[in-house]
Length: 167
Image (tube, rainbow, N blue to C red; front, top):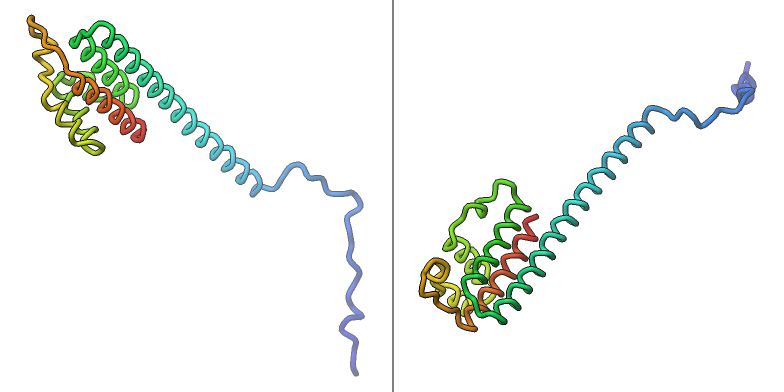
């Protein structure tokens, strides 16, 4: 009594109407939701980075403008006020609670010196010798030397690069 095991099988039975692709299965909705969330997060990060790059590019443009203005007028107090205003503005755009908004001129000069120390210690020493408060607030205005102006400009550029990386 041997029976053929395959003789009891029936042929494949297909449905009469074709199955549509819509609506997709729940798993595809989850994949779509995760993909849209990922795209949104990438766009948000890109737009924040783009905005930060704009602020830093504008800050570099302003610093170059202020340095050119200094070379024409030789007004050390104006140069320091403008450079520190750029630092405060950039600090405010990268962090709303930035301590730079209310930092003293000496603290801002120290920030420049610290940023420049990594790159060029000799120029950093030039910033250390700048008597910031005497230049800003003294009636007998002192003048910056060429080395000190170069050091301030390099320090601001180094500080802006560091601030751009922290965004």
